[in-house]
Length: 390
Ligand SMILES: *Cc1c(COP(=O)(O)O)cnc(C)c1O
Image (cartoon, rainbow, N blue to C red; front, top):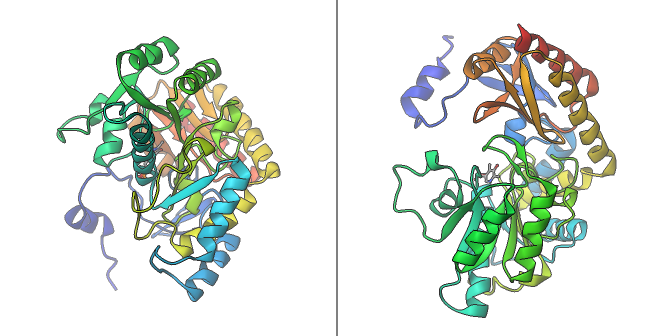
């Protein structure tokens, strides 16, 4: 039978927003994937920080299949066991008090934005609705989360945007303070390691000063952990590395382990804000996704997190030795690599050599599965060093 040309069919039938890399992936196990020609790749992308335990992970698959055979979907007007168990686990592991489930990162941030505005509206009435976010941030692709995103390059073509977002300079507390004094602010929202914006870990003093200022002024602190969450930075959530207590944490990507699931976690300060009929989702907290997520969260334990730190340090140390590497950034296994090489060519050379990598602005971005075996990781890093310095 003639092999169909999936690349051409994709271009013909799918909206062309992704600039796809030149690989048709077919199957895999853990951190090793194969394309439709049987060529092998080591995966340093994990579906953009989604596949924490790689692809086709046995334990996650078993949890998902068991739930699939019991009950695949039912309306949120009924109780389901996996959703309750997952919420309990998330609260117990974080000290947060309540969870709202959705299907994606953008939706988890939408929920955070709506809740912050309602919190302020309930308490102070109209007008106190501005949310401070950071320049170079990324919070999603819906109208509100795009409005929250502090990147001019994304603020074209789609106006008018949702009102009430102002953008502070990352790592500049005076910039946050000046905006807070000039506007009626209900929340500050930020990623602690900016992902799409260039794998930049925020400064601890800046984050702590911002958190303290927010608390003193009854401004809610929203931490976007869509990419940093669920073990990626060497803590269950990145805020745990910063000695702060957010009011709202949004997360998604790795939480579902490969199925779509978002969650917005609320601290006691605003756990009662979203009340009857104020928000909802048809699929949010779907039993299959939630059953898989229970398995994922249970396995992100101290041993794994120690491992993430050690592997992250190893990757950074090795790559910093390359003569064409200018700097290495990030936290845990969320790593940016700035080289003096042409980025598109570098990525394409990696693909040729059987390595799946990502970019973030002008950096190479590495997000390996957290459980990638050390020998596989070593092979990948050696390859990458050779490619960068070739
Ligand atoms: C990926 C991402 C989002 C958007 O998540 P989707 O699931 O694509 O909607 C939001 N915030 C951050 C920090 C992200 O990395």
